[in-house]
Length: 108
Image (cartoon, rainbow, N blue to C red; front, side, top):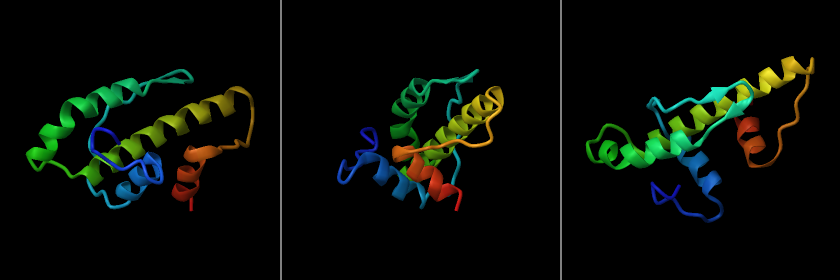
C-alpha cells in the first residue's frame, strides 16, 4: 500500500482488495513457500524494486499490481493451509480476520 501510495482509510488491505478487483494482468511475483512456512519479504522487496519502473513504462497498472499481490499471497496461503490440513488429517480449516474476508470473497 505504501509503495503505491494507497490510502490507509478505512484500511490498506481493504483498499488493496478493491483495487485488485479491477486488475486484469497477472504479474509474476516471488513465491516463497517452504514446508508450512511462507516469506512475504521477497514479494515486498520485489514490488519496491520494480513498481515505479513498471508503472512508468506502462507495463501494468496499480490495480494489476494489487491483483497480482493478492493472487500470489492467496496461493501461498492456500498451499500451506492444505499442507497443514493433510499433516493433521483435518478436513476443515477456520480462516478469520482480514485474510478471512478476502478468502470468503474469493470462494463465493
